[in-house]
Length: 560
Ligand code: ATP
Ligand code: MG
Image (cartoon, helix red, strand yellow):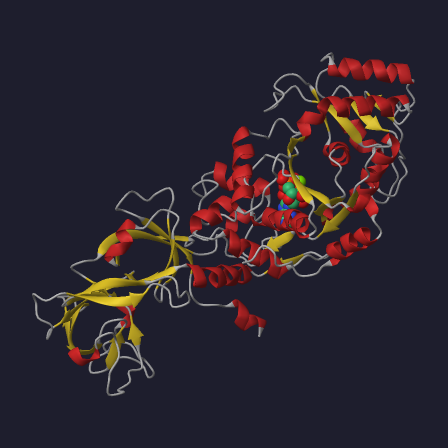
């Protein structure tokens, strides 16, 4: 995928283009990606990254990486590291513009004092529950706090004492003084500082008061000279507050907040709280479990950054929430891997085949394209001999009509090898097929007949003498319900965990060259899907393969 190609048009691009035309913001485009370091990034964050970093790139602007680290109780250094790794892996760079909201704590404190001096903020000593009750509801207005009209001096003094640690958690908060009767609850004197006697991953115990998200976010944006502050729809009702703070503080820059729909994906949860729970309760094998919708999980599964960016282009940017079909993500993955992944043969469920007219001592090397989609991918040699394995379901003793694979008396192509005919079926004591005997036509080397004789079926195989034995993991959706935001009454998302989401095949037979597969490398196993050598479990000479995605496309068909 070329980096110069522009993404499809959407309403945010229209806004930016108008701004550029009007020479707003000195014709700069400056965005930011603002994760909270309280979990690993997921495919929803990828959408946000593609929008923020993508737009900056497209308009020769800049995009900052900023950690919104205002909540010391849930944040960890591990997440700060993993997030940077994932942003880089997706192909984006923040150059030297790595920021932390916690770097602004002192400035944010000074700005809060400015608000107090302007009569726009006050310390409320009401108990938290009282403050909650006074906020009112969507239908009823709020009630003013008895502490709302404290003098500036008293407020300054109390705020300084909050910072000095003289109060316990919940004994006092700093609130903006706006309008307790505003129809928008966010404007009813929101809390801007709270006391939290918690250690912060960067500032340690330097602070015991922490600024709230709404207050921090707009000021951080303004300090960094952000022009377009792009966020998800749930912040739409917070926009008046975003603007209010910046208006009161008369900041040099006043970014424009623009909201877009968050990504919801079928059969998937993207809530960080739920993903954290899955990890902590060991319902998955960690944040990078290949079934997780995290960037780390997708990477381990074998998904490429190009596929994720293609998917983000495909889903577009809209203003209304919807549910994206996970088949669309799978389609993008296939599209990308088709041109990238080398072809190999692997037999997942083996059935023994003996070519009775092939000399026992003979072996030969057959040639095959590494990737017919890529003329530069070269060719490889595959060993062939009398003892082979095929997929169990590529053979039927008494087949239905239109079964074109191996069955007694019907000639099929063993891909890259020969035309083969089954002559006899061997069964074990309990009547199960244990082996099939076949003959080959030596005149069909490479899998083609000179005389134009055609076969209807083509199947894959491996040489039993040369095959590598590897572990393969097949995956299905982590959840069984299409819309995980619409559960039946009384049910939890955990009630929909798919017990068959991971299937381990301990001994799959593969072409010998796959024994040396490098961790992280992608392959197409003919007729079985795209696979990736696992970066955690593979050992030299003993790779473990994850199935990234099957070959069957269910999305373009649905699309019609
Ligand atoms: P939290 O509930 O912990 O705030 P969050 O999903 O909002 O979770 P953040 O770390 O705050 O996580 O998100 C960073 C950025 O990614 C934000 O701008 C947020 O709007 C965006 N983002 C998060 N989830 C999605 C999603 N599903 N689709 C699109 N953007 C998302
Ligand atoms: Mg958030």
